[in-house]
Length: 321
Ligand code: NAP
Image (tube, rainbow, N blue to C red; front, side, top):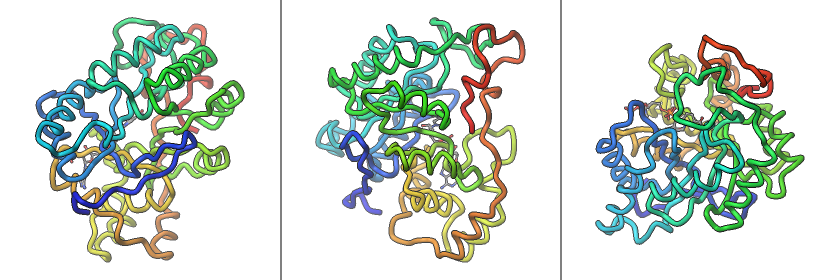
């Protein structure tokens, strides 16, 4: 896809169009100069959708890259971009939502977000965040209060749409029962090795868009990446003259979901956009449907080994079906 061609959009239940492929901005540890340069490369290559979060420390370098892109004439204005940011668990409290989005807007040097998400269905005590999250710090999430504050952000024009991330069908059910504005999007881990069929069908029925994160299996070096080591995907890629990454991304596109994919390498950024002008065959789709499923990390992955959950049941903060 050349820079002149536009990435197709999905219409959200808020009425806004969201580009089907966005750039994931997270890399740990964050290196601001490297990040800014990668985001500028992405704009040059044709990305117009960026997925950031206060947790990633990528808001400031993204804000700087956007300013620079305008100065260089790569884009006319910020309005040409779709920017998502997220509320981290230490600010997942009703009275902290508004200050949090305002801080994100300051970091991004913009007046509005396109999409603001609750990052996790979990609340921890206010204060500096730690990883892993201390079990003792987890407190009950006031979902009603937080969602009302999210709705307030949208009503005040600080974001065009609101949504959630890492919500299970059970958690979405709770949210839909109290929401005046339904979530536009649920951002979850999804790729051919974790296909999320149940959640996908539920969200389709409820008119909630899905954004797939870690579409290439994620960045963890702790275990072999299930996408890049899949023999099924490799065989399809070789036969088609595509890369495994492209097969994975094309499969997601054909599932009707939005993708946020991270690369800080210009060639791979380009490669990850070259997925619109060809398709998988029925036989290839069938083979992908048989790939053994590797369940995405449960909430245990985020929590410290020590300590105990005092006032919260683990089933209430689960992030995986
Ligand atoms: P990912 O997009 O699955 O990418 C994993 C790794 O693949 C990257 O480190 C990248 O390294 C490499 N890669 C990219 N394109 C490639 C290609 N064509 N060929 C070979 N390798 C390639 O991982 P992710 O960062 O976990 O997910 C994407 C975004 O989703 C994040 O950046 C973040 O914005 C979001 N996310 C959200 C949550 C949440 O809780 N809501 C959780 C995780 C991630 P190089 O940079 O070296 O290319």
